[in-house]
Length: 299
Length: 319
Image 1 (cartoon, one colour):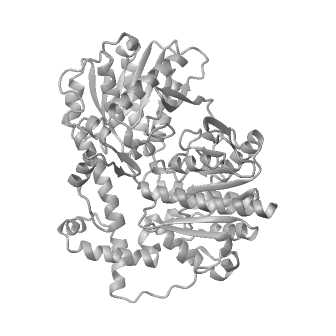
Image 2: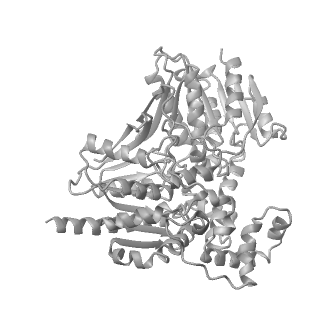
Image 3: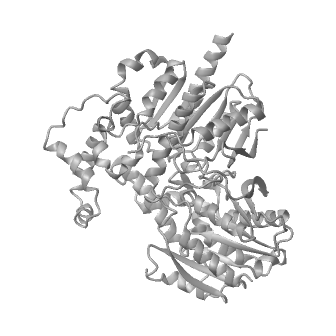
C-alpha cells in the first residue's frame, strides 16, 4: 500500500503542437483538437479520427491521443473531435443519429481542410462504432468531388462494428448489469428496453441515453453494406483480440474482402474500450501494426 | 449568451493541460469560480458526461466554471507510468494532481481575476479537491460527489476491506443468486470472486467481530486497513478553517459506507462541532457514476440548493 504523495512528474519532453477549439456542424458546436507535426512545414497528409460511442470513448481516449501524437510525429496533421452528444460537443445523446454523426464527420473533415489547406490526402481512422461511421462516410462521399482528397486516402478500421443490432444488444446488456447492481435483479429485459426505445423513450446505458433516432439508424444488422465497397484507397481492417492467434472474425474478413485494397490484420491487445484492470495509456501493438501498414500503404 | 472556450494551462513542469472555460452570460462578482476536477482516468466531462448538466446549471446561476484534464489524462500532455488502473487511482488519492489543480487556480486568478473557489468532483476529483484545499485557503467550498476515503491499490484484495453494510448487501445478493443455475456455473468454472463471497457469507455462520475504531492518521499501516491517512487530516483542517462541503453520495456505492464506517463513526466527536458546515445528501438507489438521468438531475438540484444556501449566507455575513 503506497501512501507517499506521488512526486514523480514527467516533464515535457517532446514539443507537441496541439490546439483545442470549437467548430460548427450546422447549428451544432463540436469540440476538436488538432495535432500538427512540429516541423513547421505545411502538411500534405492528414487523418481525422472517429471515436467510439458512449463510455467506450472515455476508456479509449488516451489510446486515441497517443496514436494521434504518433501520427503527428510521422508528419500527419490529425484532427480528433467529439461527435454531437459526446464529450464537450453539444446535443443530448438521445437526439443523435447515424445521419447526424456522418454530418459531424463531414464537418470535421471540412474543418481539417480549412486549417490544413495543403493536405492532399485525408485518411480516416475509427474504433468500434466510430470505425463503422468512418467506413459509411467513405461510401457516402465516394463520388463526391467536394471530398476528393479522401477518395484515395487510407481508411483504418479498428475492431469495427459491422452488426449494429448486435452492438445495440451489447449496450443494453450494460443497462441490465446496472439494474442488477442497483436492484439486485433485472427488472426490464432487452425486449422491454428495445420496445421502450422504439416507443420514443430513451434507455440509459452508462450515462448515455440511446434514443429512437440512433436505434433506427445504426441498430441494423446490415449497418455496413454486404457487397463491394466503393472506397478506392487502401483499407486496414484491424481485429483486436487478446492474442495474435485468436480466431479470425468472419465479419471482419468479409469486410476487408469487400474493398479493392482491403487488408485484414490482427493486433493483440486487451479490450481497452471497456473498463479493464490494466491502464491503457497507449496500445503499443495496435499502434505498431497500424503505423507499419501505413508506411507501406500511404506512399 | 453564455460562452464556452477551449483553453490550455501550463502546469508546474510545463505540460499543457487542456480544458474548457464556461463563461456565464452575466457573471456574478459575489460568487466564487467553480472548478470541476476529473474523476479517476475519465476526462473532464466525467463518466456519462456527468459534469455537463452540472456545468449548465452552474453557468445559468452565474458561476464561472473551469473543467480541465490532468496531465497524462484526457487531451492533456504527459504520460502515466502505471500499468494497472488501481495504481493510477491510488496515486490520485495521495495527491498526484494537487499541483495541477493549484496551477488551474493560479491561471484563473491571473486571467480572470478570480480570488475565491469552490472545487467539485466525483471520487478521485473529490479527494483531489480536498487535498488541494489543504494547501490553498482560497478554496472555500467543496462540492464533493462520492468522496473516497480509502486507497485503491488494495483492490487486489477486495473482500478484506469491504464495509459491514456492503458485506451484508452482498450476502443477501449471493443468497438470491444461489437459486440460479447460471451463477453456480460461474462459481464452478472459477469465474467468481471467491474472497468476497467468503467474507460476505461467513457472516451467516460466524458472528461478525466487533471492529476497533479506525486508527489515527499517524498509526502504522497495519492498523489503518485501507483507509487513506491523508483524508482525515485534510478534511479536519478544511473544516477547522471554516470550509463548507456538500457531501453527496450514491446509495448503492461502497464509498458511502466507507465514508460512514471509516471516517464519520471513528471521528464522530471530532467532527461534531463542524456538522453545521457539512451537508450530506444520499441519492437513493444511485450507482457510483450516477448514470441515470434522474440521479444526475438530483445531483444538479441538490448542488444548486446547497450553493444557493452557502452564497446567500455569505453575502449576508459580509454585509
